Every structure is written in C-alpha cells, then in structure tokens.
Amino acid sequence: MDASPSVLQEFTTSKGFLDLIPPEVLFLCETKNSTLTVERVLRKEGYKSVFTVDPMGLSRGLAVAWKDEVRVHIVKHDRFFVYFSIEDPQAGLKWEIVGVHLHTDETNRGFQFAKLLQILEGGSETLAIIGDFNAIKNQEEKEGERQKSSTSIQQFRDFINERRLVDIGYEGDKYTWSNRQFGENRIKDRLDRALVTNEWKGEFPATTLAHLSDSGSDHKVILLNTGGEERRVKKRFRFQER
Image (cartoon, rainbow, N blue to C red; front, side, top):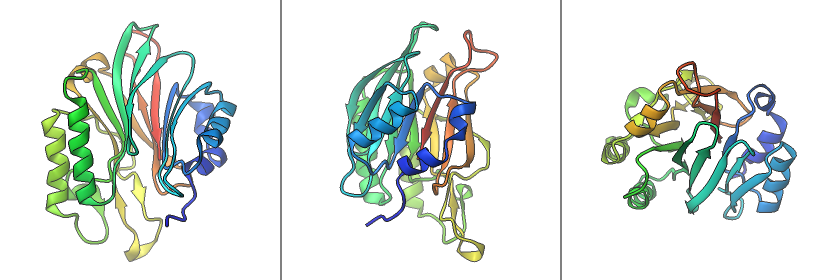
C-alpha cells in the first residue's frame, strides 16, 4: 500500500506557483481522493470545470481542471490516462493532449504503451503527451542505484518512434523524480516530460517546459508554456503536476 501523501494534499499546501503563473489547464496524477474532494479543492482555486478519474483504493487517481479562457473536451480516459482536446478561441487553434501516469512495472507499462498507440491511431496530428511516463530514454536520465534495463529503455523509445514524437526538452534541473534520500541511497530520474508531434511543435514553436521546484512531492511540477515571443497571441500556460 502506498502511504505517501496525495498530490492533492501537496497541492493545497504548496501552490505558490499558482499565484505567479496561473495555468489555464491543470493535470494532476496520484490524487488519491474521490471526485467530490478533488472538485472542492480545485474549484476553490478558480477551476470551475473539473474532470476526474477516481483512485483505486489509496493509490492512483487523475484530474484535469481548466478555466474559462479555454474549451476542453474529454475524448477518452482510463486508469492511467486522460485524452482531451483543447480549443483556444482567441488564437483560433485546437489540438489534442493526453495526460498520462504510466505503471512502474515494465510489463504493465508495455501494455499501456500499446493501448495508447491504439487509441491515438487516426487521431489528430496536432498532439502532445505529457505526464509521468515512469520510464527513461537513456541511462543519462538516471542517477544512483543500478542502471535501468535496456529492454525498458527500448520499450519507451519504440513508443516514441512509433508515434513519431519529439521530446521538447526542459528548463531547470535535469531530474523530475527523487526518492528523497541522501548520499549513496539517493536516486534521481527524469520520469516526467512532454512529447509532441512535429505538427504540434509547428503550431507552438516557442514552447518551453520548465521543471519547477519540488512541491513537497517526490516529483517536480512541470510547466508547459505554449506561449513566447514567437507566438501570435499572448502567453498560454499548460502544466502537469505529479
């Protein structure tokens, strides 16, 4: 049983970034709370629209929340992902995004990759996938403990190549997860990221992904900013927090 605090608890006690950079769309993993609790907390923060996937016992749980500036339509969902479209009336743009929280087990994660490829087949080419993949692309994305298995790395790389996705990179600390230990016992990985299609990247050429400071969780908040000076409209913010 996972006894760690929920991301919702961490969200309520460490959310100063919301005042500085109020995101329009919010994706949370590992909420560990019922729909009523999640909706109550997020609506208090100004998110009138909330979609949730309830946890399984005391683990997992997902939430997507958005403000009035954008229109969000939930396409599909499962225990490990929420697939939705975003329409920005101001910019006249529409794209699709998948928020994910994949399994820590390599075999189960392989099944999840296969399911994602299946549901995305024939979908929009303007697509972003963001969240906790629980996987790394190479050994350089890991520090401490033994190396990740080559089959796990190849499994992730095959998924990226099959859908022809691009890792948009990041700003800030290299790693997004830590076991929060010290010395020789400390382990850090880059588990959270944003993968996009070339078509999506073409629509948002100035996109940046920031790894923000720890929020009390073992994962960092990651902030996807689709704006920038090259964008035709004012800056827009999208992010996922584990």
